[in-house]
Amino acid sequence: MKQKLNVGFVVTLSGRWPRELPERRFKAYGEWAEQHLPSCRVHRFERVLCTKQDMLECIEDFQKHQVELVVLVYGAFTGDDIACGLADALKAPILLWAPREERWVRQDRLYANALCSASMNGASLRRIGAKYHIVYGNKEEPRVGKELTDITNAYAAVKNMKGLTYGLFGYRPTAFYNCAFDEVVIRRTFGINMEETDLKVVFDEMAQLPWSEVEAEMKRVADTWDTTALPDGHLENHARLYLTLKKLMPRQGYDYAAIKCWPEMGNLHTTPCAVLGRLADEGITISCEGDVDAGLAAVAQNILTGLPTFITDLINLDEENNTVTFWHCGNAAPSLHDERDGVTMCNHPLLGQGTAFWCALKEGPVTAARFSNIDGQYRLFLVRGTAQKTTRNTRGSMVNVKIDTPVLELVHKIAESGMSHHYSLVWQDVADQMIQIAKVLGIPVVEL
Image 1 (tube, one colour):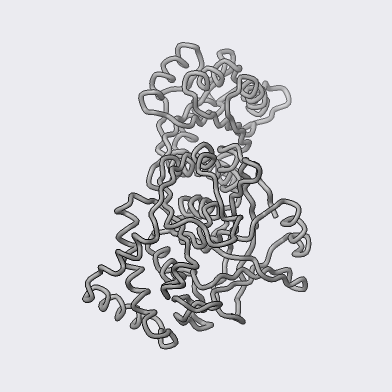
Image 2 (spheres, one colour; image 1 turned 180 degrees about the horizontal axis):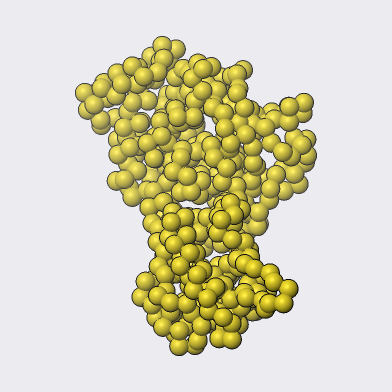
């Protein structure tokens, strides 16, 4: 992630509780937070927080360091005053972390009562309208580490999304109503700005490129992939479009984009599937078929992982193996290709008129996701799965993915929910982090 999240770390207790355990947690848990939250810049308040004066000094310190999320670890039981005071003053979410009780002795007292305190503080934060999370368990537990990482990564991802510019090269293809979007709702929900560049600008820029630059790029492509099946002129158009989009994205100030890839681009024999795949491996994410909502999922996945994403259709089910087939025309990034099955750069697999990768895609954990605007409210649709070794059995890019949900039940869920036909697929399990992003943004989640 380009921007790290500013996290304020504090350990608390109420005055009547012993301080030995809080002091130990202050050191051990503070060091853990600094070392195990890679998306965060962790700033520790200098001492255990107990009194109102401590709280006021902590607030001043956290404001100075522009804290965006507070991690509050219970050294011992703490009243509602500190959590609510921090939330009121900082306007930042509070992550209430309750470690387990450290020792149980029949005739001895309770030394922390952290879980009870977290529950009480959380209820009070909710009553005042403050955003909070509760995590229970010790820093050594993998589950706890994952929960903390998922939550902090989600806030960091949302921080990185806000203020982005999402570019539009054209609008949407003919009759693709589900690729329409509402840029005001996108701005309000995600904090992302939309801007547009006409396809004529793309075509004019392609025509003006020096031949020497185009020729060198054509040679590079032909030396890398089997292009012998391409019709005359298509490799040149591929090179021109690739070079043009690489220049236009930074020139127009676009962080991410979507492109209307047909019919106009096809009419000029420059359908961009293979170009989009290549650019994805270079950190330039442009969603095909003008599908901004699928592109928003790709933005979140790319920010979380730094990996290329694959905009795809779900085209087939296999009840026996409980797999689904994700396929698209040929826009998969080369780093996703399974070269064991063979890879060629060919014409567009359905109508011709461009370049596309015909290949199977690699194995591994995947997360399929889409944000969809339904009746003015965004929803996040998610599918968890594992990509299987796949033999390509039709033109284009494809992969079979094993999922937990019975595949016929998946079809019913899609039908009932209003889920559209495009997904963004990333080769990493980030479903829980995507869910946390949705929670931060106030978006309902539909797990398919």
